[in-house]
Length: 270
Image 1: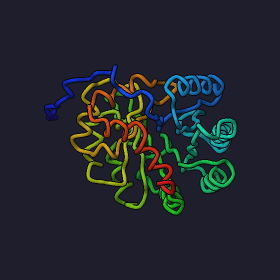
Image 2: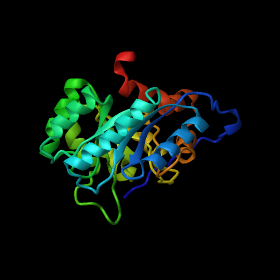
Image 3: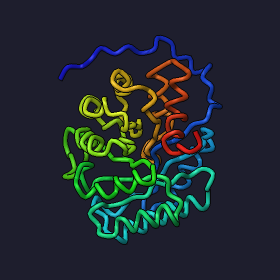
Image 4: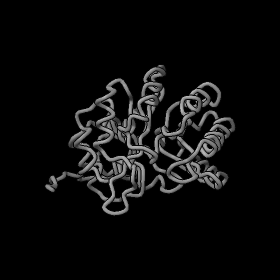
């Protein structure tokens, strides 16, 4: 593998950074069975960092959740939306292998107030089982967030990598895709999707390599990058820091910390 030489900003004066600018967390969670702790963590962070929106899904019940687990996850998200409608933006969690997936989507968007779809690890992103989900999202003009995570060891059986996301994006060029975690290894995940304008990326997670986002930005415009945290598993300082370290351009910072996520999830408002 060839690693590119990366140029980092020469001056990062955090004292002059405008911390009052709005922040959107494009990737956060509750965990089934521990929802109250997750609520507290997200709400406390939102107050501390003056967060405008948290885009959130509830996960749990293993990597291949059945109908009941999916229903419980989405109820937890819907309850959080109901209690904090001006902060929480819901992502409807689905397992495309379940036979009631379209019913789950209809309930999520028509009754529970969801604004996006969440795919985790039950299928690869390019599995044919995902096609009805993709077509539903296209019809409603809503994004689908795809968990994408390349691991050196311990890769899950159906855990998507960049090339799986690229296959889905090419098959459905009208589909708006949020590829999570910068793929965990941008050198593996970003090249396959770099020329696909319908794929956005989020920074979420605990990966701390300083070259991840700067490398990504050599291949992808900052207008396709969203700041996300993976709360409560990871936090704001790490992921805001990735953005601040990657560029000193105030416009690019604002785009990644707020504007891009808003445009992706609220297209009618732009």
